[in-house]
Image (cartoon, rainbow, N blue to C red; front, side):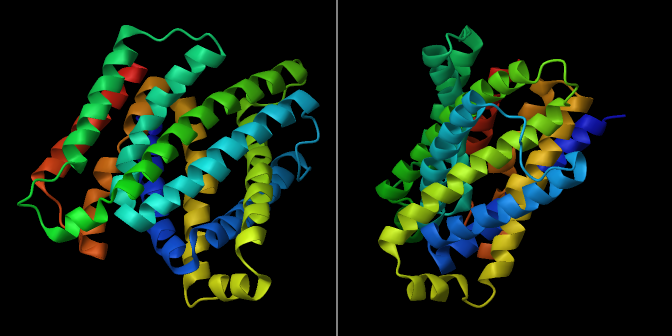
Length: 308
């Protein structure tokens, strides 16, 4: 009873943990080296899981069209989206970065309407307006607010956060397209949907690793890269961020939708911007204002309308 709801909340906890440890690791290591390490670890973990589940470490059944769509999804969602996300963590912190990630559902709806011709309902449009209003409430600071808050909410950090939300939403649509092609290619083979999702995540991670590795090679010489990834404690933070994000987080989210409706699961899983407020207060000693709490709740409330 309530298994899906429990798994959905566990997903929120995993994603909150990922955001916390990811913020620390990306600040110590640098955004590009951190993402190279994270994508490498993601591929290792996913390959091991696929080997255990299917006896094959890579998705050999995926056709060329599937690979192309999912590689494009990985480039948009990981290389562009996550680059923006972790830069936003560095500039405005994980709690504001996660708040701006509530732009992912409206971005997915808009891009799905443009690319796939999907219908955008009035409730989805209303939810988009409410989410944007909540974000504006949360990130707007009066002159009486502390200088620390104003410093953290740099315009550049907010733009990175917006880029992360849009990249996540567009990447989700491209991923959906790729998985649809995959399901058509293997129709009748009996391959479970969950397995296809993990294999799709593997292909996206391939694009992420290639993109970040090429990008990093232009910005970092090998000795400097080695110094970045070998800083004290940073590898542990990176491993935890990887396990709780693209590995356990994805797995829990997939299982949650098997035990409850997608709407209920997605609504609960959108609570990360609210749940992350307390950990950032206790561990990072970041001040929480009533305006931020109200804004986060309003933004999440807007997201729920996408799944009604």
